Image (cartoon, rainbow, N blue to C red; front, side, top):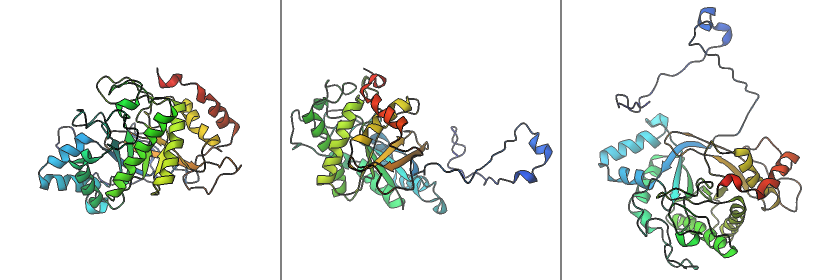
Length: 337
């Protein structure tokens, strides 16, 4: 536990011991502070991939600039296994370009290709991450035995958007723009792979329903565009990048209308070749729980799913309910205007 006044810093709490209900006294059960916890071992839900935080530009900057002894102590306490004195964070979320916690929003620091009209991405470069993001990430990877990396864009290059604004606009809805942005995202994966950094998961857009953020980076990505972008990303990953990065769908807040958003994801049932569908429920804040459930999608030419993971949705992807949800794809109202 860490308290706001810093009187307790990463202090380990006493182990909680649960007792069988048959051994509890009547007096304890009448206690107002008493709580009964029942665990049904026969009911299982999705597996948890990891617990972690976002490694943003600003957090990387602060960690990188800290005195070496403080930096190493901090990273060890955060990412080392519990058996080695850490708290065992095992998942990191990286921003593809600038996020709402970046050090600079000057040209050249927002995205990896600010050259207007660079349709061949000749000027694409992730070298801006070499100053403090990559060094900090390498230190974390050396401290953690099992780290899962997820990457998320907050905005496409501004010239690929309907409005050349950092905090607004949508991805241009043309085949060329969508395919070019897909290449851009896969190029990010390739450049990190060239540094021997494997990105396990990539999402299409941070908070795709938020398209008006004033001076902070954001972009609306409506369901139809997300579908097309996902197809292109998968295509380019398979044709030019064979490192097994999985695509995550719907990277949004907990308070959004999940059932409606699910319709966009389930449209993939009728569109994608066999891929992993991952429903993402992710928190940006340090220490917030990260969880997801996943299952492979059926091939368009097959009525049965491919080999199934131990992390599966409790619903059949071909069920009438989910097929009905797929048909709601054409309603983008819940994404904002």
